[in-house]
Length: 101
Figure: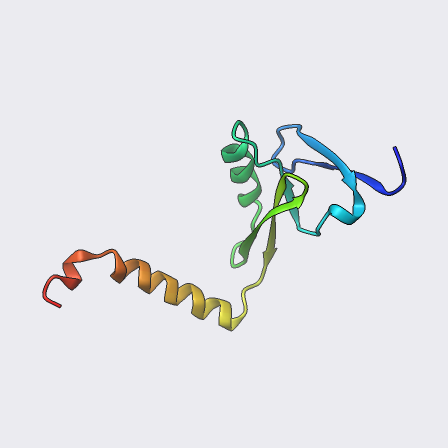
């Protein structure tokens, strides 16, 4: 294998791997194969590693066909965005609150 290549293994534990140029790999905390066969289980394993109080950021195709997650402490702006999204979800889908509007 050439020095400019790297092998990435699925952090979900399924055993899948991909070898590609280092320049084609974007840094994330956890890589997963994102195949139809393994997606749900691999994603579940990785998300279970997210520390309490942190948020998980998903990115597609960070290493070829592999996707990835990064865990980080949310900023105040992130917390406001999450709160706003929760309010939209709550009131945007609750028909009882909007019947008389």
